Image 1 (cartoon, rainbow, N blue to C red):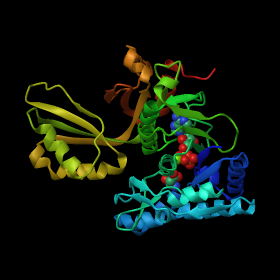
Image 2 (image 1 turned 30 degrees about the horizontal axis):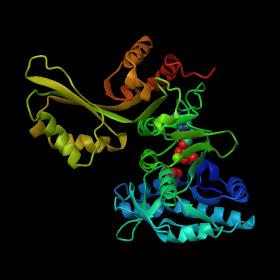
Image 3 (image 1 turned 180 degrees about the vertical axis):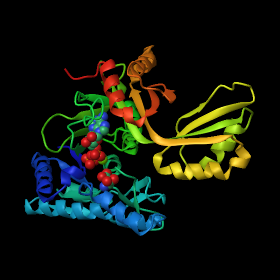
Length: 406
Ligand code: ADP
Ligand code: ASP
Ligand code: MG
């Protein structure tokens, strides 16, 4: 007997028929003698609709009310899945985040899970009941409803698996595993059998939304065995594992892209100590995440250009912070665009191979794609390019690193 957490994403619970299908999958695990906790997302498209309604009422909404609204999609699906299980004679009940409770911090719309009290869930599971948990939601210290950021049901599932000391956390979705890149834009993408926590963390944070970044962080910290697999087939999924479980390591394991980028250049800022602090200090105070940064070589020793990127959602705010501090910073011109994409290659094999980045630059050059900004870490190289070349770049790199399926 094993204890497992099964998480079903939006497309897996998109309508009543699909919810019945999910219930059948859960029943099969119960019939096999396993203890099961189910975590569900809202029906696909529902959360977007709810976010849209909130935006329509007030773009400057109160984040506490936003969370009340957008968490409601999961309340519907968790009730439906519990009901579907009951109708198959599987003992089950639904749990909203606050009922467990799943305690979070007070950062509404992007809350972090602090603690999950599993006393009651443990008891119920030991007694043969399936506990059905609404993903994406929790409760803040002041008793207000919180949500965990878009895609947050993955994190609910992994956190629950860690708290329940589950043997496995299976993430059921509309693809049958983690691929070498998004199979929607590269038909030749290949399914990865096993991927390291570290690589999965980079893939997720650099744009592959198959798992929410925080869920991978949490899995890595608590050593949760995560498997990504399809709700609609019995194909083997992808296991996220420790590096030593992987026998043969590719140099580049995956390619990710993110259109959630905007670029800002300050032309002719003074080339003197303190200038970076005068730009990035106010941005940090405004809670704006700066990602890539380049400072150009100073031509005359007096002035230089500074380019950096921010998430698209924070683009306008970043511009107004810079403009508000223009006198202190002192620049000649401010250039900005959101027509950019970040494309990244990821692989732990990079640590021990040379020439990996060069191949990336050569491949893009051959396609006539200009690189605007570069950033690297031990196991990834990211470049910023014009958005119109996203597909071309990802496909060319996928081929260049030998990742295409035969
Ligand atoms: P769910 O609603 O089940 O949480 P998501 O839409 O959040 O599903 O995540 C699944 C999607 O992630 C896939 O449909 C796929 O388009 C996308 N995706 C992006 N990169 C990858 C990748 N490397 N491997 C698999 N899927 C990926
Ligand atoms: N329903 C939420 C979203 O769409 C959470 C999730 O699906 O993981 O972001
Ligand atoms: Mg998701």
